[in-house]
Image (cartoon, rainbow, N blue to C red; front, side):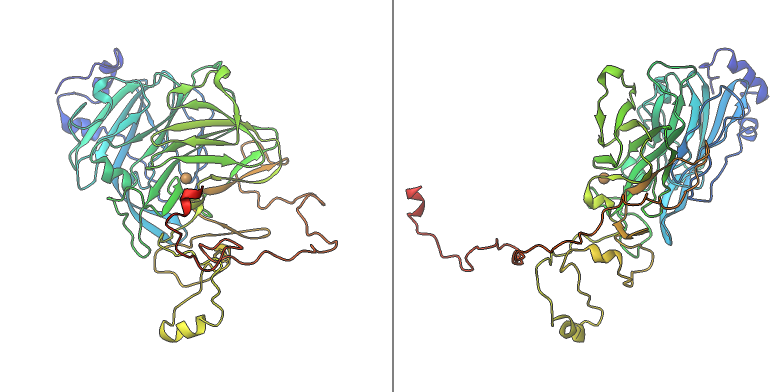
Length: 465
Ligand SMILES: [Cu+2]
């Protein structure tokens, strides 16, 4: 094996540290101990114990992996392996991930850091890791077959490069990626600027997460990896609302949120009560002249968006994907639309034949948030989550942005529900009721006032138009 020469100067030090480059057993003995995570909770930010200082990110329902400093090189150890991810309380999915969880740990480094990542493959098939968005030597880019041999099961490969530019990046396999990404293999990579950067603001809170989607039949535990469009589990960092940690900020703080999309569709990510600017992408910081205010930013497939805002409005604000089916928990998609169909008197008769029959969707599906209907094992409700005023009727890609005036700096604890000041809540009208007849209920396919019988049109009828 050839000595790697990517780091002039560092290479000799590494050789010394591992005694001899020729003895692979010695090199293996020198592998950094992989750090594993058993919990799907949001870990506290990891303040850098050594190296250049930076303000760490908080990965929603995730964590940042510690590293080892070895002769000026930051060394990480990722282990690709089967994991069981708790996607919602009591709903467990067999996934493939890294170091105990899917997504894998966030890797945080500083612009200019020399990085060495050991990747051990404990999957039943070959894998690789692609470092999405990085400038690096071609042989480190991780496309199996193109840039490197695939990493066989049981083997450890080493990636070495310099984190050349600051920004928001991610990592994922480029080896059987249809299966491996459908099984949850992904993680975040954050490169912090090494000094004050004209396009990168100081922020007090810096949140990061990936968008991922899975096709898991109710009652099943393993995603359907061949699925292209019909996903039913929509997640922020492989967690579904109400199990996604809220984003918390003190009033007046500047907040950055970094979102990467590794699903097979786009996600318009939307915030309430505030506006933000897209300040960065996986291509780097956005020039100031190219920024404009928005409340929704579309994160297309394979993209990252970094948004920033001033948390100046106290409250509990919704923060979610704006595709309404993506704010749903596990669901089947073949539900007939029953709105306007009068079932009165019918349910009892049907239940004589089908005892479990349940009427759904006659007045819309909002009341499903309150239904305690029996679910198959190992799934979770389509919409759930309780708020201070009742059911939130949301699931999937939804959480809250909680702004408070009285939070301590660096306090990420959920402060509970917002106490709205007196007389600032939408209220019931107490005056005279509306003095008009309600429009009549419509049947599917029948507009109000439409004739109930369609007569065949006169063959020559259109000639007069
Ligand atoms: Cu979405």
